[in-house]
Image (cartoon, rainbow, N blue to C red; front, side, top):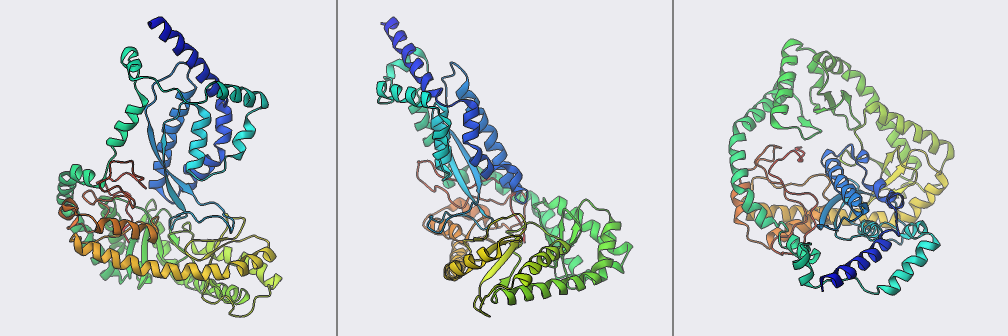
Length: 506
């Protein structure tokens, strides 16, 4: 009997190996190139949390693909991966996907297949990427071999439970069911982290009070409009930066006077950004900060030139408003932003596109130097490349005008509904503050708040009611889309954590 089982198993494994060889390791890499391009961490430089998640998921994916190619490797556990997928160009007839405000969306992939071809197809389909090119990677011989194999094995092999008992191999169906039963829900996660978050929150209160005091004193002393941080540094790091600014104010009291009424933002570089905020690089010494404060009067001249160019471009393009969205665009200095506007103005001024005056009033557009084709964002604004075919640009804007107005109107409606639901959720759970990250869209926030309002979550009320929103341990950050009670797998935009390094305090 055991000899018969051994023979059957050996023959089946040979057939499975023939199927697995339909796609080689090199072919799999070539087939996944669109996927790698959409999730590569290098494209998420402005989003460190999403970059880290993609890096870790890619490592696990590569390990899974390597195991698939190992001869005789049979033990596969279902692997769930989360990726942030970059926005791609869409045709007018395509279905709009739920991209966040930062231009990417979250995709959860569960790997459970045992051959490269099926795994590659699952990944591409999960990310809504084309799979047409995968078929071209297989030669006619492989195609014929696959067809012959399929004709022999018209259905997947399903071993009897006794096979796993005798051989000691793991039943993949049982592993999948166990993984689904162990899927984390918001309720279970709050149950497991409530005590830890409460302790971290209590321990961090003195440091938070110190940060509030330093910020308030500096804003009053230097007559600043606000002090912000571009990145999600911890409270200790932020206090250190404020102490450095305070020492500079005492050592050189004249220089910071030029910043009266300004907003100071701590970031990776010094200067003034495109929105007019004074940037102080955290790696720079006081001497560099002093020079920036001394140069602020000269920046006002450059700001006037920026406003002039925005107004002139708007007049040439039918009254459309030129905007700069800090959350969606890379951090630009005002010099870099002026150069972009100046280059684009030279093109439209020389071409003189025949837009009717004020025909595009009420619409918005942003300029990007790393894009090659115009695009209409889901929030209703146009994303225009600095260098493009102006005739094609004219027809694109005219064709998308009505759609853009509808998106802007829908965005305003979403914002009103979002504020209403945030207020209702805050009151129901007695929260001190409830807010979202820039990468979460209004539609996603509406969905999340609606689901929360349907539930009774005493742990949420007990832990978060004292949260002040600072990025310190003790604040809870669940994903926008969570499973509240269902044992089925849920899609998470990120795994919740009681460590708040991912938040952005404004």
